[in-house]
Image (cartoon, rainbow, N blue to C red; front, side, top):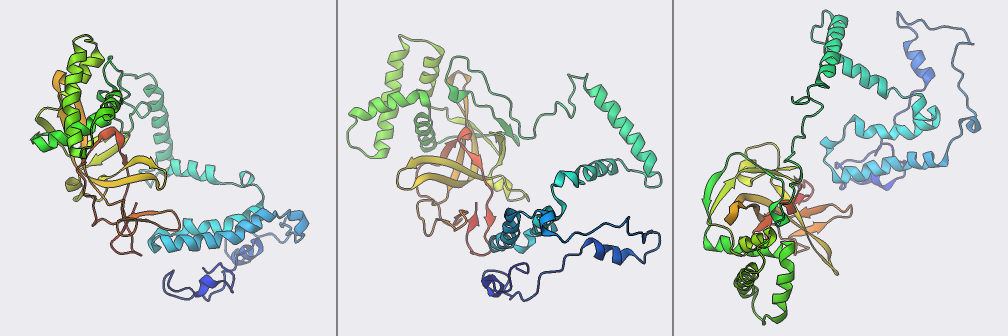
Length: 402
């Protein structure tokens, strides 16, 4: 707020900021002459008195070609930073965040940055400084490490079967796309389990919830679901799901007698549902994300249990984002050696726009971690989820910012 005009209302706004009134003037920006005056008396810095060699400071505004856009940007940057101070905690702001205040002024004085930039030189010097291991022989250390780096780089170009920095896989790489063998694409999702699996036996309720969710989210099953919906009577959702499972199983068994293709075989496997014996994992890599269950995540400084699923588009409310926390990772077994990974989640109450979820003026989504949806759909396919991070909102207690 120190860089705002003296009559700006935010200078006296205590509630929105750190509880203080800002009365200080903007700090003076040192010119080139000021810096030369400061170092004029230092030993070892020859400062000439020759007027021809001194840098001439021009005060002609037409020669500087000041752009109105830069002047507008210079006035807008302090207001933008003040808006950010209302959202982020004070620890977020450091020297680099406030550096942009001077960028517009430097662009008006120094002209295009490519003619005066030192970024590439600084990056190269930083790269060379990383080679220093013996501080008593700095130059020799840099030379030896540089030659060794060039040598290993040249050799690694020819070692195709060995893992080098040029062919090293990404951290959360779970394998490329699995080519379909003619079956269902739902069984061809690349993923990698973590933290060792433990056997888990599904109860009847878990099997029913998992089975109906898989059927409703399989593209090849949608035509059968639409066909069944046409002549199904008025019944509750639970009755509809159970009737569809039985009808779909009988329908596929009849079709399989005349069509024994790989796709129909997978549909038959899917209609019979998962086996009772499953495997439980604490972590999984899929969609280039690394997920951990909530219990395992509590002992870590990182957070990998936050998930979000994009729901169906509603004409009134628009896209619904189902936010939640991952509680269990299950690998289901099907007949024929087929496997499928499901995530069990606790969903936050995204239907209550007052006590469950809210959107602030800067389009930041916040959820109430104490309110959850009361629905019988705990499972979601692993390939449907994306990862989010929940940060504690210090300005609104009891809320987490997504």
